[in-house]
Length: 450
Image 1 (cartoon, rainbow, N blue to C red):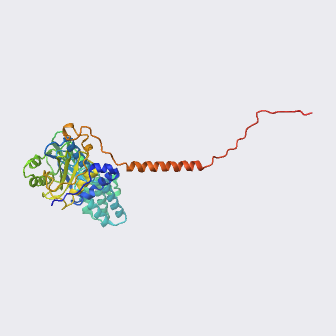
Image 2 (cartoon, one colour):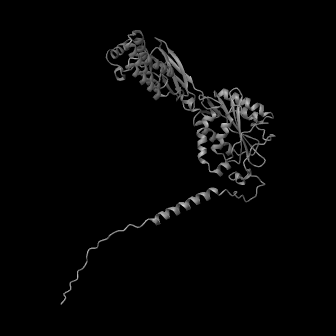
Image 3 (spheres, rainbow, N blue to C red):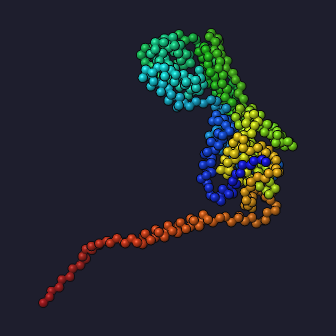
């Protein structure tokens, strides 16, 4: 027998008035997803599909928007047919965290714990890379190398000191050592070694698209700028395109160095193979495998596929399946709705789908399965807001909303009445304050008695 996670419907949630739990479930959604994937996972959201006819496009659009909002709160999300912002910007660093670690290494250096300082700086370099990529990384990389120079000087490791100075000046030939913490003999040494740098080579830039912006070692670079011989790190960005990253060499004595790249679009492709699989007679055995291929090609860790079908009573079956890269199913969440979607319901569904080993992949078009799903209580008001063509013809012409429970109204009214009565009694029991008023005389009377 197939297992169906039971999910409370939207209408019942409104009856309880449990709005607070909606947000609580949304906030803990990330912990539910962690049952199927780890913290470094990347989610892929396929466009919600309609199985069968008479599914309003507005319902699919609303479903996609709410699923995106839920997953993106604490995870990286790739969406079918949409642009991936992280692919456009390229790798980013936590500048504040790295600078904090540099400060800790500087404190260890001041306390003469040179080994601890060196190990901390090597860890920062490992996070940054051998060469900086962005302007923020360039600043952190400079501070790390300046501190490494001071450590080598304190240990009298002259070879490492001179080698680090040469690398720093090769990447930043315009460095002013005294402005960045070096003083005394070290500052004079850095200035003196500038004269021994190899001649720079002019850069020729050919990029597609033509408005792409170029950074070399984290410094904005244009055609004609000169680069020192040795290794450099190239970053190219353009709106709507994937960031391009490359490490290249500048040969000593070369006439010029050519920087060229053709950026590919950052928009993820559409997946018509999923539509073909859903329309095939054996869709259950095909669509999950196709979804696994799409997840793997997108570079994601797990995919989310939502399908919607119309029931005979006019309501909708909503199924959400979580699929891994290898085509295995982490789980399936199911729900019956009248067309209104709440975040707490969707959070339940994704949580149910992400639990490995719970649920079976029956959410791919088999709407007439032998095992019926748990449905909420039918209510004609479920169909309010749908187009007239999408409403059940068997429903009466005058759709009256079912009478709701008045328990909450009675409780509020009783509390208000008791509170008002208590306030009136307290007020009436208090005695009015006595005020003494002295009036000045306004006339005088004189009487002469015989």
